[in-house]
Length: 383
Image 1: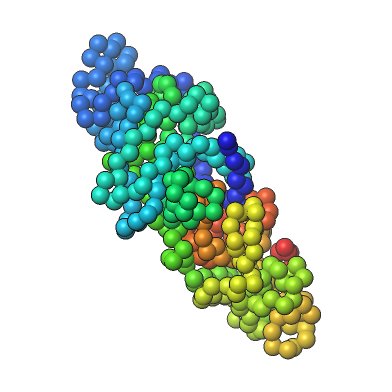
Image 2: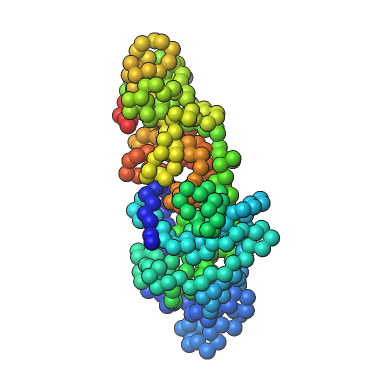
């Protein structure tokens, strides 16, 4: 059974380098990472012209992956001790703004002293075209690596169970021969470890596959800072700046703001600093995110009633935008769905406060620290 998880925010990927469109010969499956010094001794002169670059590339490929084997042994590198947790590898595929999740191929109790696991061959129905644009016709399967608390004892990463680690690596299985450029990046037919971003930049060692335990609820980041400038046409002198809960903007005026500064601008600059968790009545279930979260919108407002705080009687002059998209601060206390774990793992993000541009729009995305402090208020930025 496969389940679709829609992600409420995306991490904008870096633009890949231009690729050579010239058709390449596949890498031979009979490769060995440690002794590939006499490969292709019977090759013709055309093949031999590439032998120097191939040999140099192979000498750098110390991944312990066996190109002739469909079964691999791997070791996971997780910082800290995690008793009563299970490490798992679950089939997934990108699907629009989220992922489709399939069967779990591996689920075993995690042991920091052991950590060795075997991977069988994916079923034929789990093989699909991995990157139709860059590598047309190349079939394979992706597997999300997670560490979770096994509440029900079945070892599977079930919905609702706390996920404490996801990424930054994944497993990928390549079926058949590979394009030369993937071979030069130390990939082999069969099992490989690689970055969760799916760019296939370079294979990673099988004997030390990292699992970042950044999703432990007790380690959630409880501070956040966003800021920027006023970019509107009006004079912001005297405008207030507040972080207003989404529920308040939708009509529940009983909710309190988590930040409110009635004189919020200093020569056109502004800033919001949050310290602590949001009030419990700000938190609600967001189905598209697969999590309970609080959502706070930074707003600039004209303080109409002069009562010392933002209220619905005040006029919102504008929202804070990044590249024209309104930005929100999300607080996520726990990851209990694979779709959310995949997104956080892909972004290298932790739990807690997260600045998200175009929240609820067509291209929501996490912002880094620099972008979070370069937001712009203006009359043209509206939710």
